[in-house]
Image (cartoon, rainbow, N blue to C red; front, side, top):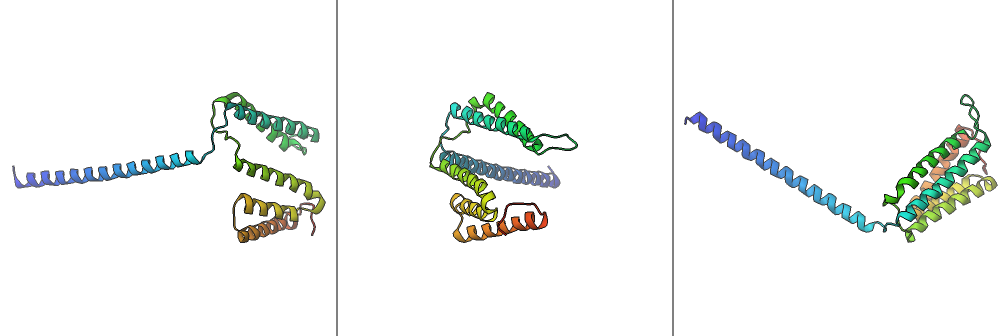
Length: 195
């Protein structure tokens, strides 16, 4: 064996050992990433509320189906108009039809799904959000959009979002001011308002 053959064989074995080392390092890194992903998945499963069962899944789909049907009936009563001149009920009707189709699909396929959560204390946050939206809708024509919108944003940020007092106040005031500037001043939309 000549010197050049030995050098070539030594270089190729050094190259193959370097490749093997980098493959091992890559496989170790992939292994640690997979372990981390598995750990995070297990942690998320622990924090998730228990599954409510197929009856709850189908019940939620039926409620959404009813909302879609009532929305379609109400928007049809507003008038759909023509495609060239849409009436005020056209887009609400289209959205209601999408809700009906998706809800009906969920009624059919929902029995096997596992993404419905059992009601718990954290479920009350959804109820609080819904109640504040109903209050916004009730107060809007009476006292305008500024105060109800400010209160809604503050409640959502402070108690539902767990933001600090300072950021809740600043973001609420800033957002209502931006909405006022955009919708009332620039777009001149006739919203019920105090100012």
